[in-house]
Image (cartoon, rainbow, N blue to C red; front, side):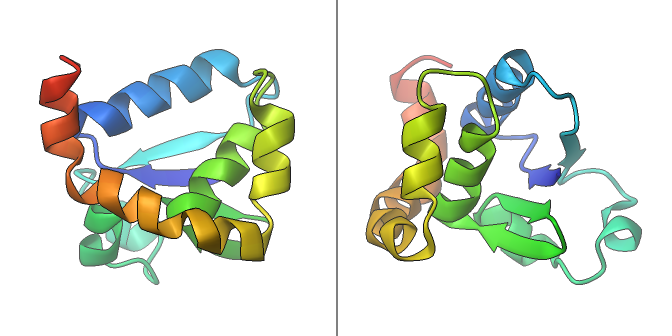
Length: 116
């Protein structure tokens, strides 16, 4: 699984640290948005798309937004994992997409508010 994330965002960096800590399989590769090689690694992913959302490549498919976050959490050994696996269903994740978009849009403000 490959995850393209915004390494300038405190919320995104903390998510990466949390996932790395909770991941028990070690098959997750994080790719920073500021990495100059990102265009060569994933040509089908524009910087504009990746700057606005998390992008996950897993088993040949590209996931974004709430479904991507839930899929990643579902692969960890955290207590949230079983719930995340259920909520990562295509239709359930669509219901959570507005919440994800709100947090993603104001992630810099959220990181300042919670002092990340």
